[in-house]
Image (cartoon, rainbow, N blue to C red; front, side):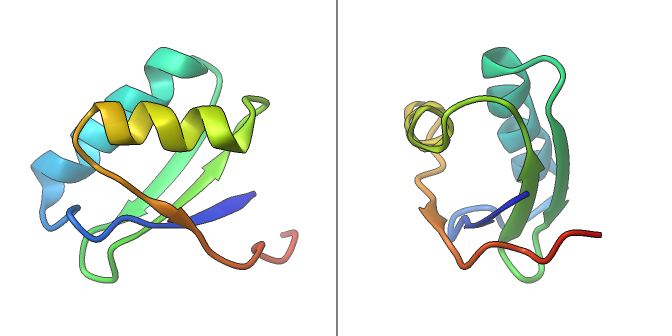
Length: 71
């Protein structure tokens, strides 16, 4: 699971847009988005750099945070 800091994700609409961008790259991805903390947790087989590029293209530049512990 990747943890991403998405500073421009400030509301539910933003979270849906982030989810749409991730889903366009990997339809099987799982996303948990928290606009309050500006954090998204993504489980995906896509390359992390490709995810970051897709988010930037969607208007939500993000940066990787430390890896989340496995659940």
